Length: 313
Image (cartoon, rainbow, N blue to C red; front, side, top):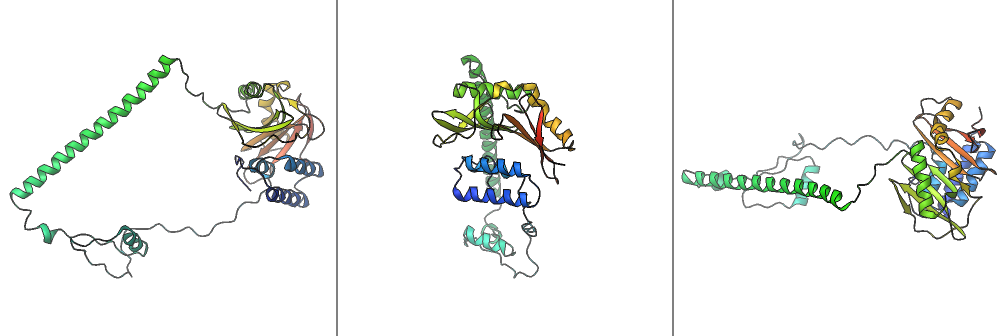
């Protein structure tokens, strides 16, 4: 199944795969009939492959091992490889041949300069070569110093320009499952779409997927790092009734993952995500908690935080 941030449009084959995973989980007793029906409805309304991945994220089986690790390539010659001769000064070996020889385990030929230059590199010649090498080295170090100085100057100049022009540096990302993060998200949705009412929202700590109200339908957005990313997809028919995210108290949102983990006997959970919609027949907040090596568990709350459903014992 695709990555949860995949913005590509979901096709018929993608939906079929998602439904197959849901049916398999239901047959294995990992899902209740109500949860299976809810997920099937969301598969039909999903707009992107990322949306489908969210719905079956906790149902996928761990991938099989891809095989034994490949040993690292070394530069030493293989004991069984034929000895490679020393190349003369006039020989030229293309890079692709050098790469192939290295892969076979053989040593890469070297260029022997002793025969060609041994007689010439004597006396004053050696001194001249050393002087030239020293001059080149000093010039290289000077150029490196100038380059570093230029980079530092550019960085500080950019910082000063931000302060002088009144511009603001990008705000650091905030956990959207905290009270502050939830308030920021709701305000951003209201500013972007003109309302805080949405058809559904899936909230992770780092980002949120929003099915927002659009002209005569719904439009899928992703909110990340204080900005919206609009999927280039047409307006689609809306599923369910809109729900006003401003009706949910920020402090309630912040406490729901820990509350769910406690209810579901999973205090050491690794991750959590929230789904807010009315597809179950009434406004609700479904909270999933996940722990490595265990199946995810979930609880459903009304907008006041009262438990109205969850993973059966």
